[in-house]
Image (tube, rainbow, N blue to C red; front, side, top):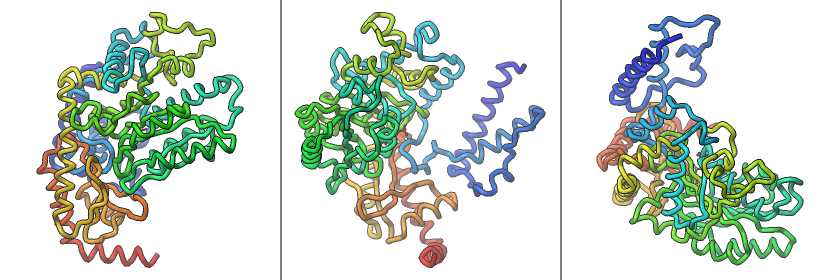
Length: 468
Ligand SMILES: *Cc1c(COP(=O)(O)O)cnc(C)c1O
């Protein structure tokens, strides 16, 4: 069997390859999906490979893989690389603990709990709060929904659904809400999609009207999902207004902060989630705004009893014993669970909460640079609003889907598109805090140069597209 040091040396060599490649080609050369298997050797065979060949296959794979850490990647709600978080994740892989028991995870349990405790303080939850690290933001929303369901109808755990539970979310919220309603046995038809205002925020008056209507018809309002940072526009639902309603009708309020909940770290921007301490649960993804490697999602629960009731598998579970506070498997969905906490902890430990605040503030500053550029340059139309790190725009009325796809196919920059109401637009996400103002201006420069040099191509494609 191979020696671990040889493998680590090879790893270091491959790191060199990747970093050099990112400088040389910030956008990886694209392989047509229908040519993938003939372009790189991905085959698994009966016999193994000699080291040199193995290394060369790995290099090919690395070089051809999309680069998400460079200054030309703006496609997703993550991007960039925080070195101290990478370090923590590499250590987590080497240590290979599973987070269910203190016996197996030791101090890693304390690391996870410290993040949760500090996060609960930032949110403003009281001493009964706690949380866990689910597999991602979608799963965090699911965990919240299950707790809400069980809080409303505790029979569900044993007998399944027997009452007409209804849940509410804005039409701009993440699609996991729909899937989760189906997984939870509530059913997609029992979701009420509440209207959003012109800036993409849930209209609380519509929420209350809908709740009244459902009660009148015998439905049981169970769960409201408010979003802190909607997926397309990056809008923040008015939590304070919504909390008034959920308190009045005794409904679980979850705040989905997967995208922008990390504003809890910023003095300047935490007002965007004002009222969050009134919620029953709150989740945020450190792998989005905070730049840790995927995945790192945290759900916090105002009353940890709810988490135990829904996720502990002991019917006669004894609440609040010392043992259970250290045996995290009692409150998780999974059995074996990856250590997603260490990478966030190494980052937080090294830069402090002030360092995390700088990461968040930098993203909003970059967003301001981009928004100012779009609104002061002719040929651009802006579709997004202040206090968002999603900058949505169109350029010279070029079809945004065509523009994004052509930029990607030519390895110019990787950026996506989105829609709100009737409009479709390019969505530039300034979530990579390693970027400078110059990198953002460079994005517009490469885009404009590309359009200038490829106007015939873009026109031809547009005409072709229109014909089919
Ligand atoms: C990204 C996102 C999610 C899903 O998170 P995953 O970690 O990708 O599962 C949920 N809600 C919002 C608002 C998001 O932006």
